[in-house]
Amino acid sequence: VTPSHSPSHPKHAKFARKKLLKTLQFMDPTIIESHTGMKVLTSEQYEQLTSDLEKTRSSVREMNAKVQEKFSDVLKASMEVQNMKKDIEDMKKLIAENGGEVTAEAAPAEEEKEETADTPEAPGADDGEEGEAEGESESA
Figure 1 (cartoon, rainbow, N blue to C red):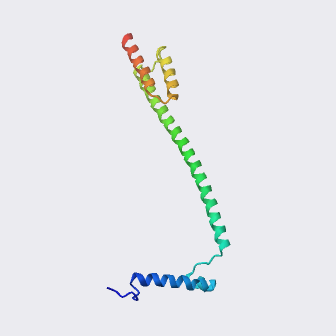
Figure 2 (cartoon, rainbow, N blue to C red; figure 1 turned 30 degrees about the vertical axis):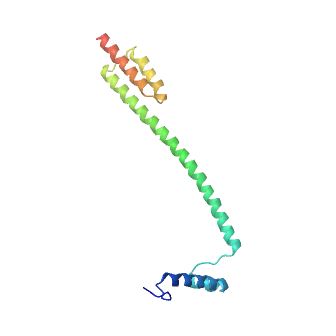
């Protein structure tokens, strides 16, 4: 057990901290600055810095919100591009199956696909493909 006046004892640390704070109140700010390397602020300077900090934080929050909006717009556009690429690949497959010929039945179905690509539901595009596949089997 260490005695309370020993520097490693918690009570001594508490006492030393209190004594330091009391003596700092009466010390010249230039002495504090030279010993600690930190600038001593007046209450007006401190208030000014805290208000500037709050303004900066609020502007950063606003910018973060704008960034999030832009990011969501980019994400939506990216998803639309992916859906369009998938539709294009599906159309290429259908054209390859038809032997490169666009029949009168296939053209309206492709137009329906383009219209359904704008809607978020992809099952409508699958229905159009099944209709073409049925039409091919009937004509064969």
